[in-house]
Image (cartoon, rainbow, N blue to C red):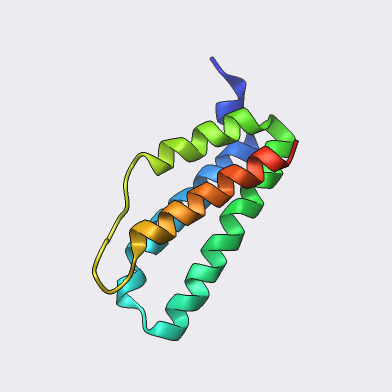
Length: 102
């Protein structure tokens, strides 16, 4: 059993990724200004949590957790909001932040 799976830093990362995934799914329901704030928060909060988690458990475990979420797909994709682009950017920058935290 891999102890990093249950590490508090990975649990926090998982919660942040889950919230981000759900938030992206709801973007089309928001007006432009609130949507922009939510997207900005997602693009900074998830990489920040990933970076902190990588310092605690190592980048490999963090990138593996991020990849699990990246592989799930994009929720709520519409023509109004480019959720696929946003989600891809969030998971990519989170992985980069984790790798840079060495």
